[in-house]
Image (cartoon, rainbow, N blue to C red):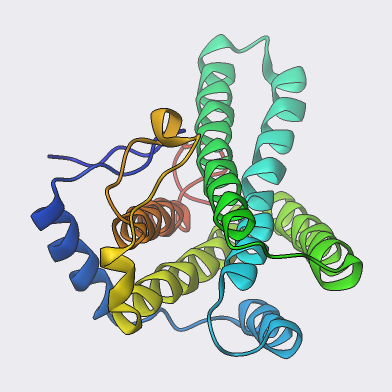
Length: 230
């Protein structure tokens, strides 16, 4: 089955999900650029090198913002190109795709937040609110600026981030086999799609991130809204 990515997550049968997840986990990481490496160092400095649900929440807060930036640029572009319906349609389609990816990342965030609540986690103002929002703000501005100057740079940065997220989730599941014995119950199951265990849920989230990475990789050498190459 071909995976689909939108508000609902990547859906595969359990055996195929495990196979695809293991293929992604053992896949060589991208050669991350300076901006991405700086972001990852900052995350490790504040939240520690070890993966935790709190760190996953921060990843998902940040992960949405490139799609927000691209959607915003697309909507501005429509105001200048609506006299050319064919080109305007290309822009509209790109905005709709960015919105779907953004919604998918939002669903990840809500489910991680729910898991934290189930564990009784209490966030602090600095690490739980201020710093994640500050990171998201900086990442948004950088994603927006790069997209305006040269879209491939923005897509390359996003591909780095999504690749890092993919490996982070899958390494965490690999290192914590008890997650495959931990039932997943959620108020978002009907929206995202049901998973039997937390391990299965994290694999699905990881494959969503891998789809986002692959989409950005495909767009690195294409025009801003799909016409030719930059």
